[in-house]
Image 1: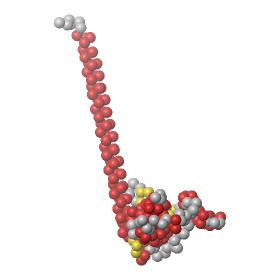
Image 2: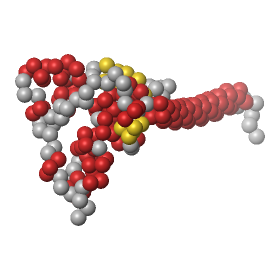
Image 3: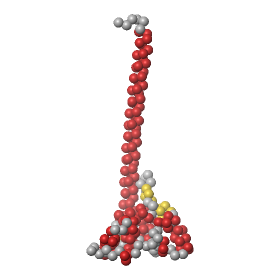
Image 4: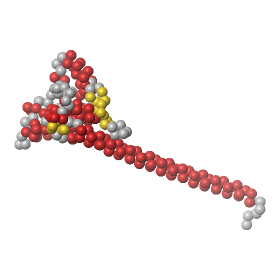
Length: 205
């Protein structure tokens, strides 16, 4: 049995141990709260991303419904992404670059219809104030410094740099197999320039 002389020494030790246990419990509780907060933030970010995607998809549906009547919405989306620098903000609003100016999605679709009228199923839905389609398909189409300068001023330096050196010669594409072997960006551009009917007329042999 402990003597009365040992009791004063043991009491501070017990108090210190109890304090350490309380501190450890508080640390664990704090770590768990931080983990839960991190999980909630991730869930909120995922939910926000999903909302933006849904809103962007709705923007596409609205623009396609009220704008030019195209043959294939999938081709239009690919073409818009490749050539017009599409992006959407945190509200799902989709915009693109026409020349060097960022414009609403509806204006991007009008620009596509103007540049590639063969993709428009109902010609009555073409923009009324549209200019003739841009026939520049490669850098080799711009034979003078004045033409290059005018193209860059109208479409931007990035558009000029994205032009191939030479146009794809469609007469070399005689069969659907020839067409299938082309890179996707080239296929998209050919369809935009010549229409789906041109692809359908290719020999399947």
